Length: 224
Ligand SMILES: Nc1ncnc2c1ncn2[C@@H]1O[C@H](COP(=O)(O)OP(=O)(O)OP(=O)(O)O)[C@@H](O)[C@H]1O
Image 1 (cartoon, helix red, strand yellow):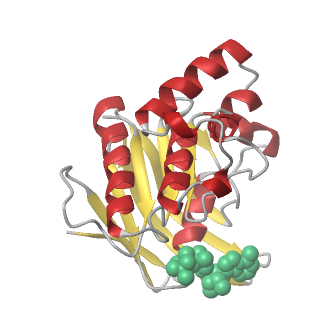
Image 2 (image 1 turned 135 degrees about the vertical axis):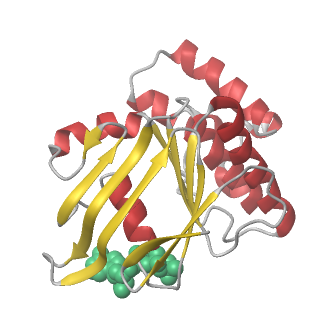
């Protein structure tokens, strides 16, 4: 199986290298794997995730995601990388002035898909996350769990190769959390999407085999 993520001697830092967060990380993630990342607060979990979608550039070392060398990529190429990714945030990051439908197809709008394609996809995706009857509502009219289902539908809009999720169930109750885990498991299993999730809590009932990395003392270690 091919690697979707390949990090070697990776260093991530802020303030022009003065604040080092991740040091000498070496890891790979293969196509279709489900990976959890845990670690104490402030250890660098979100920082690592941000590096994977090009929000921050490696200070040194190599980081190749979806075949793109993120240590050397031109900023103008990053949109192309994100075309193949779905990103899910703890606070959903929905556009409150837009309907649920429009939020879901945002990645398709950015990519210039026709209105017909957007409508068809909105229908399919909202059916998939069981929100069809909420299509014309606004995010603030939905519960937290429902808003995150919109977030998942948006992340799936372009059949991504890689889903990155930062505490996707952090603000949700157990029932809503399980719905979100099911949707992500499903994407991994049925579409062979690689899923990488930062979370404090690995779900107890998880049917897929998964890998678990912990970030500690600036290092990224696999837990066996
Ligand atoms: N933009 C920034 N500029 C400078 N330092 C930052 C910046 N963002 C994060 N940091 C610092 O980098 C370190 C890692 O932060 P990060 O948010 O990656 O941790 P985390 O493991 O995701 O934490 P949490 O579990 O609390 O969300 C922390 O010390 C944080 O203060």
